[in-house]
Image 1 (cartoon, one colour):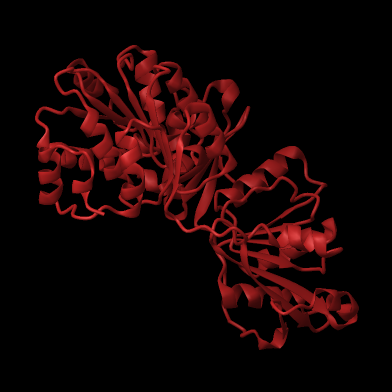
Image 2 (cartoon, rainbow, N blue to C red):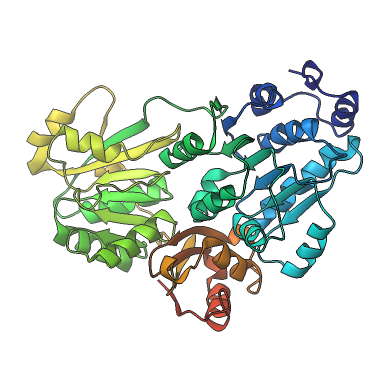
Length: 453
């Protein structure tokens, strides 16, 4: 579909042609007609899908340039994305003279932003923490804002920005157009849409499956060889993250400890853990600071991991219902999942109940043995001895890490803030640098104890 099919100005169409935007991408073709009509839109779209142009063209088409005041606010999870969005908007705005686009992000000096704000702007692109700081200091007003965009909303929630977003919205007019773009549709994203949007048009251009697409393997294992088989499964299939289900707490600890000795990063979770220990384990697994979680069924209740590569039943589950519940954690949102069940010859009677046309039954000896195999996580978790009670926010941590510490936003993963503690996932190669900077620096002008989990 061509852009010329849309009610766009000649200048905009000419500029789109000049910058090489000939045909609309699926997200643009499906969302732009609604955006141009002024409708609220919730769209599932990944980076690289053309979403910035989708909301950018919509914003610029209704912008009143002669009214020199803030008409649009775009919230992004990181400074890098905000810079990228602002850059593309400036390119799209070349056909319209005197459009002022300003970025407000943490990790950069506050003073120069004040100077830029005094000169005014039409469009603000920023991170929630820094935008909120300007609103509270009354150096930014959203009084005339008519469009709000939440870009990569799921990433903003992962980074702990939900509180800041809600506070920013207290400064925004109730009558506005709200556009929400997210790579995933979690319950939290749908809740935000229900709260912030009115009769939103729901657009999905990413392919999703109605049922989980899971390949199910059953391996017969020689007596005493389950753990070696487990390692062979990991080395043959190379999952990014795995939950290994077992039937007892003792077994969970034993499996996790043995895997660690074999250079496979594993944590155990079961009913004997204190609440703070459970938090530590779940945070690390969810933010990709641990690759293997060994769990009992009770301990795994309420565990919500968005993207899980693999589930392993170290023991045969007690019944088909438990089996279905366990393996249903992988293969979500259109991704392909893997499920493995290990059993010894003595358990063959229980296994026969599971045989059907789709499940694959093999001998464990068919797996290759890979020498020197290890599994290390992408991230390491930093713990800060300060949380909601100390008024520590995601934006404060992001600002401290991207500002004084000089980390890229892409090196910072999920941020979880609890009452007394905060957890930040840091890319493995940058953990020492981040730790030193936070340990010797300040957050919100205060020193906090920091350690590596």
